[in-house]
Image 1 (cartoon, rainbow over the protein chains, first blue to last red):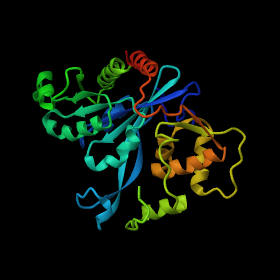
Image 2: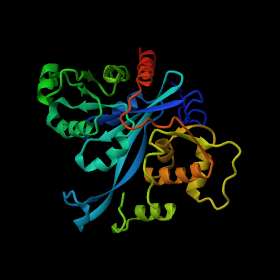
Image 3: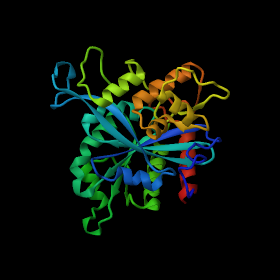
Image 4: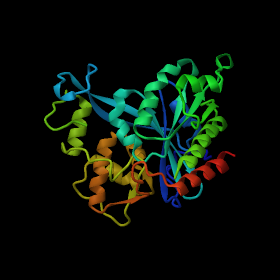
Length: 196
Length: 124
């Protein structure tokens, strides 16, 4: 890894790269998405902003809503050159339904999604899974678990989240590069088995 | 993301985006995905009437390839605005695009294999 990744020479993608791909790192608020991305990215994670128009009340049909506001969604992402000619972008994507407008953009062309899960807040993962499934994305579950007192068995997680048998469940510590990389690799292996 | 006829509350950010884009609607993501790589075409001259934002994009994109999201993130511009300005530069022939995004949901097995092997050798 470069000691000065923001210098002019290193912010750019290598000339040899011919393909860029994207994987979404999704999960509920404060589950560790940005930490995970920061552990794996070769550049300091960047933040982009997308604007959304939404009702200030919980109303789906904006045409009739008098109290529309333009809100900004911040998306954190990182980059990893994998092999000689492929660069992988990891986009942290908020899992709340109210961010559906940005999901269209995020999901387009994504290889798949890694769903980060806090084992003590499993119920908050359901809306996230709904979004991922509604865009037809393949996914794996990564239990971001670094508290030994808060350990859930894989079977418990599977049952609580009502997972299909083929959906991988892995444990990781999003602060740790090796651990995070293993979770990402588990997802990509799964994507390969699901690819035609 | 405003549909025609809608009125938005006027915020400083909103006005800023409106001025930068000349109030034009945001282009769809079809041509330039967040992870599409772009760079300046060789031997191009910056249009004399270029706005400060276009100048910033020009300078950032001249030395090498960056993803659309990186251009937005490094310049602190909203993604929609960045995409519109990049689309303009592309249509004017100033911008090159690499790695056109695959069609939605089409997962190319060979690419996934490359990603897997790349990750395994990088972290293995």
